[in-house]
Length: 181
Image (tube, rainbow, N blue to C red; front, side, top):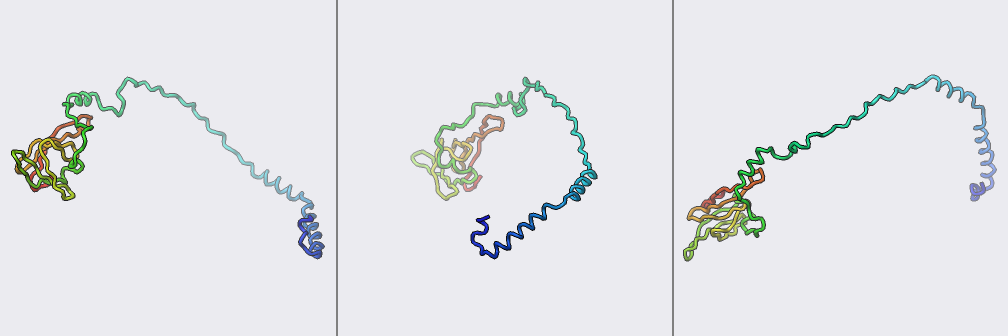
């Protein structure tokens, strides 16, 4: 208590002690009426808790179809067709890509041809406006398109595209003079 009254004047100390005594004496009164009220309230509201439901024990399921095809594998007929369709056409993934292979084929435009000493060159404009000189054996487009023929009004390509079943399919496509594909 000495900490409580350390910085207080003596008049407040004389007033504080009687107040504290009165407050504490108020708590020591008869509490029989409170106890009686609590007992009545407890007896009125007898709560009931429903019993827990009975759960059936878990039955293990035995997976017995290990010998069947996995659900995400293609059906056997599709696998056989894939083997039949695999004609050996596959792109050379290890080959270094040429400049025109970074552009979609439909964004490239043939703008002409050039012939020097019996060698025919095709002139192709990329989307950035740069004109490239290509010859037979060069690649262009994003589907591994190899230039197989250059004529005055078209450039023919052999593209290798996936067939959706894991194999590759070859298709011919042409880039014509003045048109985008």
